[in-house]
Length: 201
Image (cartoon, rainbow, N blue to C red; front, top):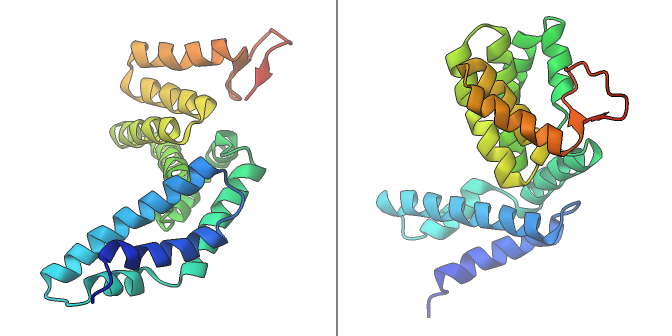
């Protein structure tokens, strides 16, 4: 009797799940759902090419379960240590002329998690904006807005909204980002304020 397809994936996913660290249950479930979706897509590709072991081929193509778990865990640890992602780190790099280096680094990074994808999009947006490629920057900022909302980071979504609104000269989008900071009683790190009680986030 053949092993059900879902069971083949389930064993592999259980291995990955056992190695995932530094994330809560929701984040862990998101990661596993993402990997399962990727496995299903790859299996379908192998099946269309005539493979009789499409699911196993997909698992082999993805790689060792412990390595995958370590990659996600490392991302989660970096996210936790830096409170998800600090836009001003890339802002500072871009401001001192490091836009090309930032862009080159991020272009070679293929993150798996929603947090990683949002961070990459946000960084590419900042680099493109600094280079004057506003249409490209707007596309990346829009991706970051969606990504940070998916990940659940309110301040970072606000940063992305400000970037998107600036690149597109969209006052409605800008106002949405500013409103979020106002609700947080905070200001963006690159904004001056005379209100000492406000915190930068």
